[in-house]
Length: 139
Image 1 (tube, rainbow, N blue to C red):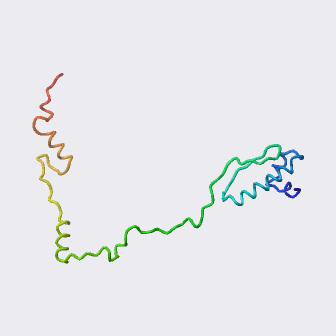
Image 2 (cartoon, rainbow, N blue to C red):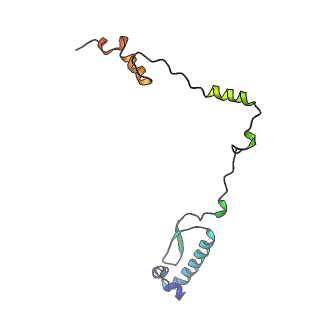
Image 3 (spheres, rainbow, N blue to C red):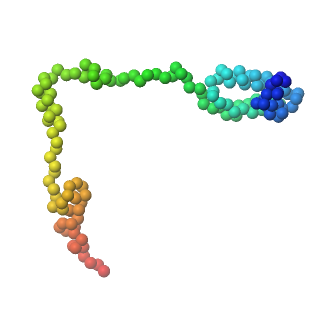
C-alpha cells in the first residue's frame, strides 16, 4: 500500500481519503483496475469519496474489435462474369444498341430566340397580350 500511495497517479486519491479508509481505497482501486482490464474500454474517468470508495464518472469508447472487420461481399457478380453474357445474335445486339444510343432531335426554336426554358419564358413575356406595353397606365 505504501508503493501505491507513493505512485504519482494515485497519490492525490490517498490525500483525499482519510488514513483509516486507505484499505477500502486500496480494495476499490484493485477492483477498478481488474474491471478495467476486462471491460474493453479505452478510457475511464473515476473519482473517490472521502471514505475510499471509487466511482466511475465517465466511460469512454470501447476498444475496436479486430475480428469485426469483414471484407466486402459482392451482392451481384462482377462485370466480367459469364452470368452477364447473352445468347442474342451479334447483328441484333448491335442494332438494339444503335437504336438506344441515337441522339434525340432538338425541339424547334421559339420566336424569342435561344434554346431552353429561359427563352420560352422570354418569348411568352415579350409577345402578344403579355407585353409590358399592353399594361394600362393607372397613375
